[in-house]
Image 1: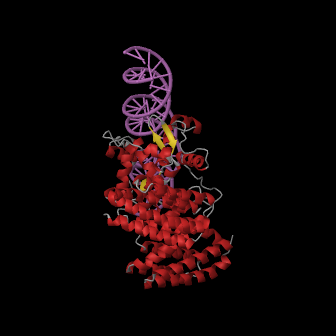
Image 2 (image 1 turned 90 degrees about the vertical axis):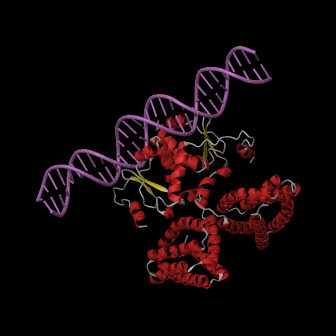
Image 3 (image 1 turned 180 degrees about the horizontal axis):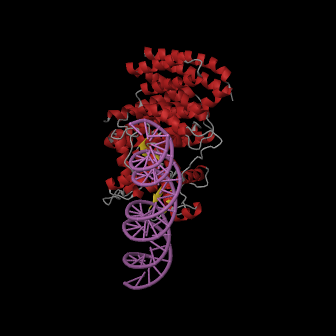
Length: 246
Length: 246
DNA sequence: CATCTAAAATTGGTCTGACCAGCTGGCCAA
DNA sequence: TTGGCCAGCTGGTCAGACCAATTTTAGATG
């Protein structure tokens, strides 16, 4: 920590050290700002690198070195021959979060445990804060599940959206993002497991649907603790089912 | 969501789409591997960019474009005239996590709420899983606090380490990283508040210290629920004190 | 010989210009 | 209308050069 302090130890004297922001970092900040403040919306195409050079008045190297991290962060997406595009909002920061949270991680025990913690709390907060729009969105996913009990793929989509909408209903952006990234990671795993035993899938869907209903009711009622308990039960069941398959 | 499905809609047919790995991405993966598998340890210096070019047999552009994201992720640190170094472990992925979790976020309500959730659960798991080494580390921070009740700076260091060690004791890497990044973000805020009213600081330290003791005792006893409750109380108190200052 | 200083070598950051491979869109022939 | 072709654009890569900060070396100084 000392060397860290040293590097931060800038001149406080009248002759303050100029914050030597590198050119590319400056551009990163600018573009990132344009994205977060909505000037650039998901799907939008950025000017070509060569045009950006003229805009910013810098070399192409700097532009490219600015785009690279943004691409790595999942904010942008480069397509050869076509251009650079703003990534879908859902994917933004997904990659760095995955890197940061999962990085080298091998097992999914931590993942399951963290998910459990996040989702139960999310259910709690959603029950306390969900607005009419949130409730409608959640209910829609529940209905969607009911109509697709025999179509695992579609059912799973609605299942995922159910948790997605609950996370959104918490009105807590951090929680929202966390749940999404962790769920995204678990999703692939779920897909694998389910495809292994398609016969059991229907029974699982039945159970899952009923549990989702309970959760939704609790949230609609505004009963935080009930929602938390219902979600707890649901996640535990789901996890057990999945782990039983391995 | 539809456009997302479209973009993902890759050929499942026998004519699967080739994953065109770019040169720089390959290098990113390699270097990242060297870091995570321990070949490159924090503080280590990488070969100069020009040397890496020869090693990988690619142009300097590619090397630099590979290093850029790693630097942005906080895995590496570039120092002009000196070289590129592997960042301290604590800082790794810190930046992308901050970006991803906090990004544009303005207020800290979400932050406080998320922290509360994470820390209470961390206390719970720590109580169930802390090994002798963990307990010793936690106890050391408690003792450190006791000896520095009048030195806010040092006290705060031990305070931070207390929570740090608890997070580590959960044995859950994801939880560990999450707590660190969120705490790091809150830390600056804590610093500001405390410096505003140095007079009250001592009284706060007194209270804080006692609460930490209670938490530690619960963890040592292995009483998860007690640890959770104690942490809950502590965080709520601390948050209230801080918010009262604004 | 120890010490301070100035030059030389090294390093990351930036610029330029060039080439490649993939995509786009329009044109033309079948 | 269909299919193929070609020109032009785009991101990806490379090479060589220069800059500014830093480290190292060599020299001058005491």
